[in-house]
Length: 211
Length: 211
Image 1 (cartoon, one colour):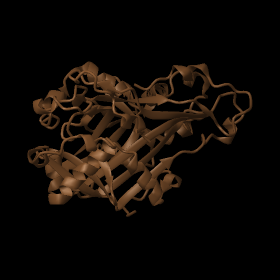
Image 2: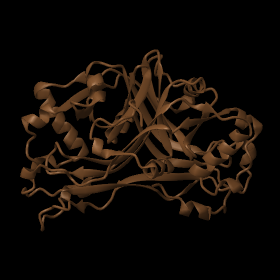
Image 3: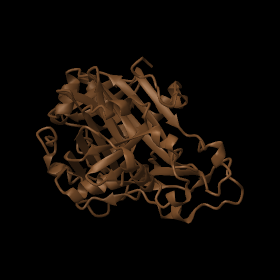
């Protein structure tokens, strides 16, 4: 935490537990990455993977976002999980369960041998156990990809997972109150239109979970 | 679309269909709002609701984000739905199904009578049909809330919903390829710890859907 990442609103929701931060990152498929161009912020969703004390991002070498990040542009990376609705007894106290992690900093370019293994880590995070049956990436493919590692050192973590926080005077009402969980799950795999007939859905897909 | 919002990467994924933009907004519970402070971008998740050609945001009047937005700070608002994994026959072509909408601009403060009805619209979007049984917000509660309307005029919309885009030379492989959908759904409602015994879960909750 720094002056820049101190939580001012609802400070009781701030978490300093590294295990909480790690858990948020481990369940992320996508981070929103914000940069500034001519004073205008842009926030763009990017696929990501945990990577020690950093977060891996990958994108096209031709992407403006990745060019600016590669040049060390100050950036903000935000991961958000929306976990439920909090149904309080008033509109004002109605809210959401969520976990969010915001990291400030500049990315570093991952190159050489580290780049090849970082690409594998991204594939393994997003598509666990699948890499064993995929061909290796070609040099051309690796060249066309920029891999960045973003530090998770200057971070702010907020977790809202509590009970409805109603006014004392509202507790006596006839209004139902509680939590409506939000579940994000994988559905049933759909074969590609051009799949060779007879190829079964791999068993490992059934083991994939989000959250 | 403007020069600032033109999609350069994967331009075939750009959508100019207002119905697509509207649909993305209508299914959003949260938008990531990016602003700049001292050259540093910050991107923060905020609950939202569609509102004609604008998006409604609400937050505490004490929040730094909402103070800066109220002062007209240039901002970027991004809504992202991650809808699936695309399992291609190579790591390089593996990707995601998603819809994202990015809007650039400055918010306007919603005040007076419009503020009261905008609060109702937010409640109705996030908690449909529930407002009828909630007490009206007090003047103090309304005062403690800032409501902003963000223009959805300078926008960029990207939709990825296609088939795995494999190399011709990979099509003959034994690797299964296809789409693994991601479903976000409400779970089973959990009563508040301090709920008066005997109050049933309201019927309208069963009608709520995400996406």
